[in-house]
Length: 101
Ligand SMILES: [Zn+2]
Image (cartoon, rainbow, N blue to C red):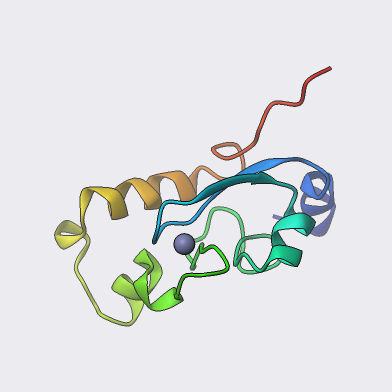
């Protein structure tokens, strides 16, 4: 995703989902970053598996850590972890919130 595309999403509200504790908040990327979320496009990239956490949770508990650090095989991931991956690879469309007119 190039910079122009990223800029187009900067003022869009998105569903931020902590993959560790399940907390959800509708925020713009800037609001999420200021609040301490680890979320693209500031942390990592849309569509690429990296930690997606709220301000209270640890990246060690993410699906990213399970795969890259703990070396858990794809078929040994939990249903929730598999769903997280599916959502991540469909970003940003999978988390965009429709704007009201
Ligand atoms: Zn959390």
